[in-house]
Length: 146
Image (cartoon, rainbow, N blue to C red; front, side):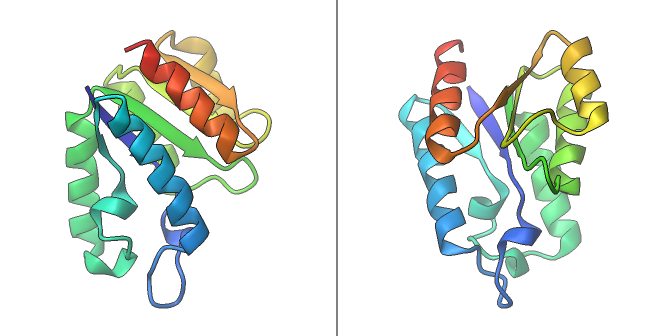
């Protein structure tokens, strides 16, 4: 299976465009878990060489959408306090394509419209994971269902 891992990017970089080291480490753990379960994975920060400035905005958009359209499964990490516009856009696109989806929030319910989607669409699941350990466990559980 090909997994699309949707994560915040533009808010997680320093002035030179490099992904913050701790955030990169967390993403690399998630990516390794997915690959270790025998799946391929697309994650924009990794795809873009861990630097947001490596691709133009249109290139990044096109590569991202192509990766999402080719995916069999969608996993989105959504920060409740400050949801990423890009992650929200990707969640909606995955839902419109009826991709099996797991939305992981760090606290409570996701934004209102996504909460409605979770309640309305049987192929979309939501789980609250306050830390990296919980995210790893939730993704491992989801991958076991594939």
